[in-house]
Length: 220
Image 1 (cartoon, one colour):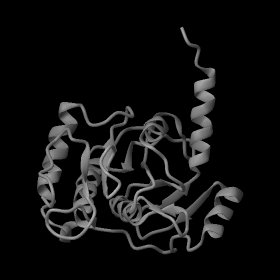
Image 2: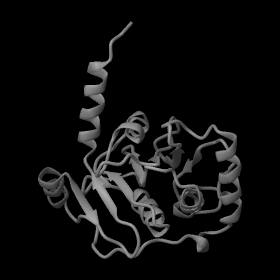
Image 3: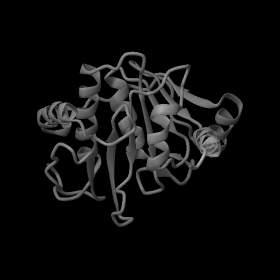
């Protein structure tokens, strides 16, 4: 692998952004996302659909010009969509705890996501980035069955040439105003593709739902 051999149970990939065989780049993240998309396609969860993608404010996770999804999030979204998986990308940075919460609580068109992912390198330096995934329960990869099947898919995606990305029928928002107008008026920005739909959703809505849940929780 490009900067680190991916072992089952790590939950994803991360490393220093840049080119070269020892640095994290689109190919590194793309191969891992393709493996996870292949796993999701082969292992559907009844009553659920799609994946919720969040991220932090690192380069690749966030576009400081449009103030929306960064280039790594956009690439990941197109890979999942090409596999026929509906994608829900947060419009603004959405950290790990809120993505985990959203998997089990944030309904989109009356349905909860199957899985979640975050573009982040966690505690690594700001020059790093990566991608980590979450199971249907909102936790990182822990089940032995998930690990074994995902690892098989990881080994099968040996190079970036095997990565498939959906063709967009509508472009990503080009300005902050365009994105904000769609979120404020419709609560989403939908992008049709030649396969599944990519939807940019309101991170604030997830935050508000999380805050409401916390307020309802009774401390014992």
